Amino acid sequence: MKSFFAIVGLVLSVCACSQNAKLDFKNTDITGLQYATEFSLPDATGKVRHLSDFKGKVVVMFFGYTQCPDVCPTTMAELSTVMQQLGPQSDQVQVLFVSLDPERDTKQIMAQYPPAFDKRFLGLVGSVAETKKIASDFKIFYEKVPGKTPGSYSIDHSAGSYVFDKEGHVRLFVRFNQGPEPIVHDLKLLLN
Image 1 (cartoon, one colour):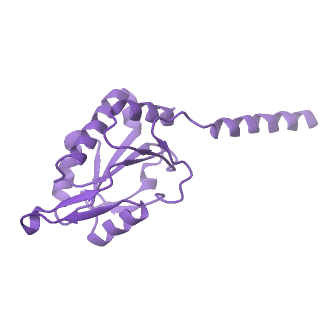
Image 2 (tube, one colour; image 1 turned 135 degrees about the horizontal axis):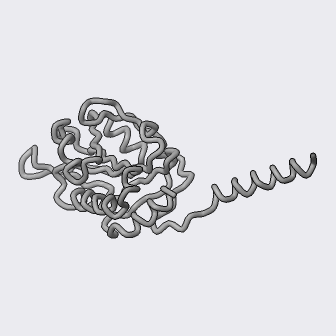
Image 3 (cartoon, rainbow, N blue to C red; image 1 turned 120 degrees about the horizontal axis):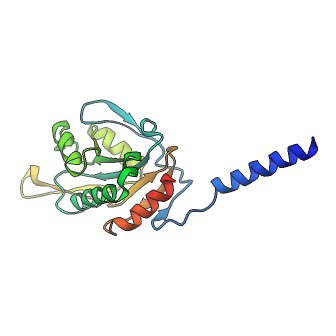
C-alpha cells in the first residue's frame, strides 16, 4: 500500500511540475501579475462581458480607439494575420478591442470596426467612468490630445496587448508592431 501512495505522489508531482514549467515565450511573460484579472464592459449589443465569459479560449485584449490613425489599425491588422496563421486553432482565440474613446466610439461603430479585421473580433465600449476604471485596473495610459476642433482630438495611449490563457490568467504582454510570428509562437504555446 505504501508503494501505491508513493507512485500516486510521484505522478502528481510530475504533473504539477509540467503545468508550472516555464514556457519559452517570445513576448513578455507576466504570469502571476496581480492586476489585469477581470473586467465588466458592454459589447456592441449592450451585453455586459467579463473575462470569465471566454474561459476555454486564449484571450488577446487590446486597448485603442477607432479613429486612431496608426497604432490601432496596425495592431488589429497584425492580430488578423495572427488568426490566419493559426489556422483552425484560431477558433480557440478571442480578440477583444476595448475602446478608450467612449465619446466617439458608439456601439454601432464598435459593432463594425473590430469585425472588419476578423469577424470573430469583439469590441467593448463602456461609459467614460467604466473606461477610466478598466484603464486604471489594467494600468493602461491614455490621454486626449486636443485637435483643431473639439471633436477632432486624438488619444495617446499604451500600445501593447494583454494575453490570457484558457483559464483566464494573464500570461503575456505583447509589444506593438513586432510582426505576427512571435505572437503566433506564443499563442500556440498557450493553446497546446
